[in-house]
Image (cartoon, rainbow, N blue to C red; front, side):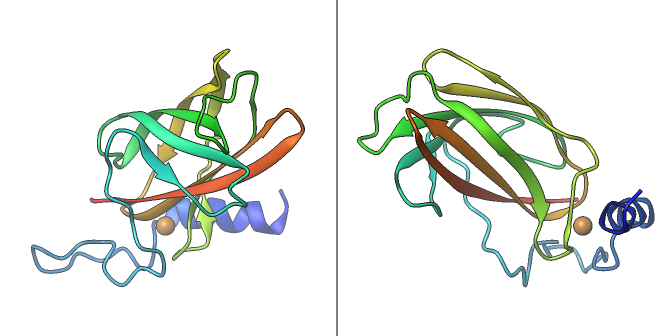
Length: 152
Ligand SMILES: [Cu+2]
């Protein structure tokens, strides 16, 4: 086991030092370095070059929460059309405030119209999670990042 994955394993085992029980009403996402998004059907994530678009068409649970999540992400062309034949090249859940990811690797099933079904997206701790999705379509590559707060 290399050093980074050992660090992740220890963090996941120990829980997070930033995980504190505040007075009721406090969010585990207060003071995060990354602002969480407000979930709506069709939410668009930005952050890449704009060569491709990424919209969250469905989420279970909705809004995304702590535990196992299932998402449907539509990859789009720069014109906003479904990117038929696109493939997902990277999928990375990450806690930016804690510097670790998820021990479980999410799976992706690609539909013919560029709709990616993402399963086993494990957001194991309360706090802000980012999920970076990268895709390729007809030789064009781009990525975007969603960010959500998972409450305890
Ligand atoms: Cu954490």
